[in-house]
Length: 187
Image 1 (spheres, one colour):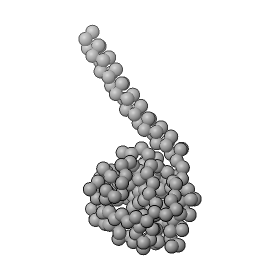
Image 2 (cartoon, one colour):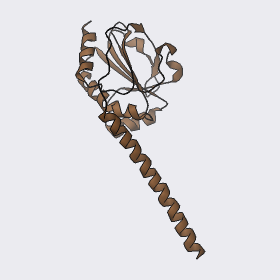
Image 3 (cartoon, rainbow, N blue to C red):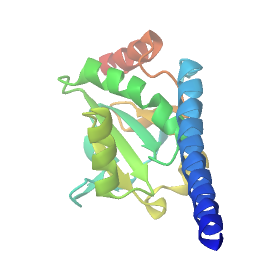
Image 4 (cartoon, rainbow, N blue to C red):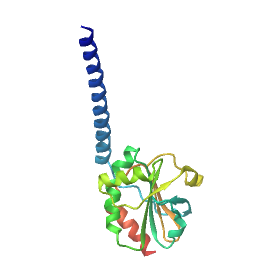
């Protein structure tokens, strides 16, 4: 009798745990999907000329600076694998990147916060992303960049100034973004 009780008890607990995990995964996938379905193009500014340099690292640990990309239009996205809106917008960033993959006048810095190289590589492999992923620490983000929400995206003009800042997820593959980048390339 006792054995039967404990068997039933542990089966019930195990079932509750499994259902909880399944429910959590389903919720995250639903949230990502809902956000992705509601993405719109970012509001692109007419003029914003601020200089923000920062340090970031390759997945192999090499230190780089965004100022080292001066002379190119630079798309910078701060994100994390733990951020549902970041994950939801990532397919649109991949599409934008694919549009400029072979363009030497445009660079991409997809900088993850709070993730290590192994986590980023696993995420990229799972979703078949070919984006240039990097790692950034909070201490390397200048206070003047002023954002407390992820994802946050900056587009730098060729002179190294920030031409656009956008906080929150967006559809980065929208034609307005491509036009904006092309306009910056022509300057």
